[in-house]
Amino acid sequence: MEQLPVTMTVNGMHYSRAVEPRRLLSDFIRHDLGLTGTHVGCEHGVCGMCTVLIDGQTARSCLTLAVQADGAEITTVEALGTPAKLHPLQQAFWEKHGLQCGYCTPAMLLTAVELLNSNPDPTRSEISEALSAVLCRCTGYQTIVDAVESAAGAMKGAAR
Amino acid sequence: MKPAPFLYFRASSLDDALAGLAGHGDDAKILAGGQSLIALMNLRLIRPAALIDINRLSGLAYIRQEDGTLTIGALTRQSTVESSEVIARLCPLMAEAIRFVAHRPIRNRGTVGGNLAHADPTSELPAVAVALGATLVARSQNGHRTIAADNFFVGPLSTALAANELLTEVRVPVWPAGQGWSFMEVSPRAGDYALVGVAATLRAAGGVCQAARLVYTGVGPRPIQVAKAEQVLVGRPSREATFREAAEVAADQVDPSSDFHATSEYRRDLVRALTRRALLAALDRCPKGA
Image (cartoon, rainbow over all chains, first blue to last red):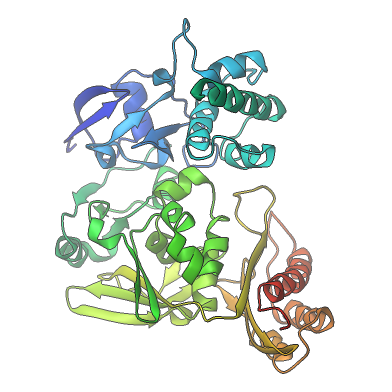
């Protein structure tokens, strides 16, 4: 099978690989790069588990071919924080019980990153609308909305 | 699931893309945002032999005002339309409708041209294009032609585009002063496919409706314009009683089908309710005293 070269920056690191054109970006990130923080659910764009940032914007990595991301800058959940120094959103998810099983959490976090980048002081309804891009089957969403609201406050405070 | 194997061809110019289409014809698919195409491929509902990736054709991504026309390049991302001040000013109906297209991550990748060329019968932009009398530009190696939006949408996932043609541009008249508008839809959850949606425009003066457009999504194989309901409005008082009459006619004229998501009767009910609400909202946006 034909393989094509792709080069991209993922979380600040440069990667070059040869892939089949049909390699999904989600599989490229998980299988070829070993970054398993990006989860995979439905693989047809409905559930949002595979959300990553492509050049700073959220995207379904299951609806993007790895070859399309040639030259792009990708951010996955691994870039957000470390166990010793959590990102304010991760800290807020911890404090507000914004996760149960954790499967949707990477996607929720990245979706919230994009929201707070463009709208640092969102209303609860704006938070709900943004998070509607990602399915969660445990929490009932309320604690996730709480967490994003709390992180927005913390991030504004830090920026002051 | 994963897509079946295909040949991948990254177009580096418009000519390149058109040559690819001419060479592969029916076996090739244009890859723009890929938000519907790759989903269908992952599900193995389609297995194109080749994909022609037009994402590097940055010359196809633009929003411009040329005389009385607003032109939108086919590769313009939906989220670009959403945040465009030009669109908000010159095509507020599209600005309102685009927010109903799936979710932000989808709109970040999905394109205006891709949405129209995919021609999903529940999609928002096709109804907007028909309501505004948009003109679509198709190019092939043989040249280009323009297609009225009303003739472009043929049926579910089916358009007037020939196998060797690429949709490159959408043209809509710059918004006429004093015209009200509203796009409304009902879907089970934000971002889901619409059960029913309506694109409405209304012109009114001195308490009388002058002109109206009512185009529905989700009630047929393509966007459905209900001329009889529009005619109910023209020359009549611009108030709720008239809108109720038009809503009854619209509900009577459409013939939605039943499926897993909603019955035909429920969709008809939604047409009735959304027509009345959309006309009231559109009237609200006409100049005061209209």
